Image (cartoon, rainbow, N blue to C red; front, side, top):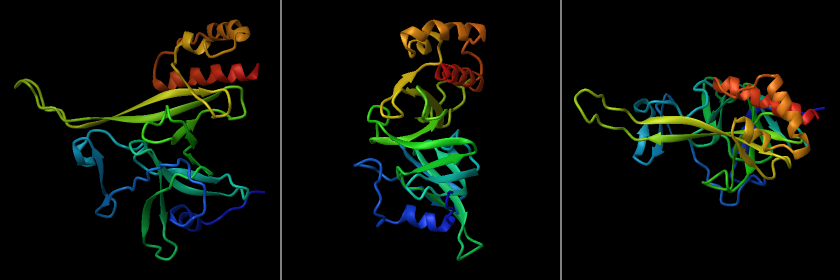
Length: 252
């Protein structure tokens, strides 16, 4: 039976600098969210210096609004709590919004420290912290969205990242200035050893087939053909075909 703890108690644990917990990453950097004017205005650090988000086209968040979520503690206590969460792609961090139990009129937004025993379920999307120097260039750990169960032959992951593009002045009178932008992208990864090692994978028929064992490639080729998967269309359609293909392979 799972134990349920208060959000305020968990916040104290996650934010205490004296917690005797194993933090993921030896040289881990903890970026603090910069909040101005009661959290209505945010700034981010870019190659152009500190920029106000209202001057940038695009958002650093997967979703601007906080979504219903669950904080899962995978320590031996196996506790979980419901919370309003959102994922900050730009800084690769999870934020929580909650009411202070001591000051009920005070709603706070905080950045959760990167502790490897915690998982975050944000509106049905599961984010977990993983170690990998090749994927995470700024350190040795980062968040991946887990797209299927981790006890399968192949586990499918999604890594979100953002590119900052500086503002550009129009080169002619017929053009307009282009504001600075945050462009969201993602890469799919698979793991055959429950998240110990990763390989990037393109949503392409031949790249996907190369991920399977030789003795099962023909079966998978027939599955893709019979379902008329083209691995084209919207991101959602493409991801659905990829997930269904991996799911079928795991069922063999």
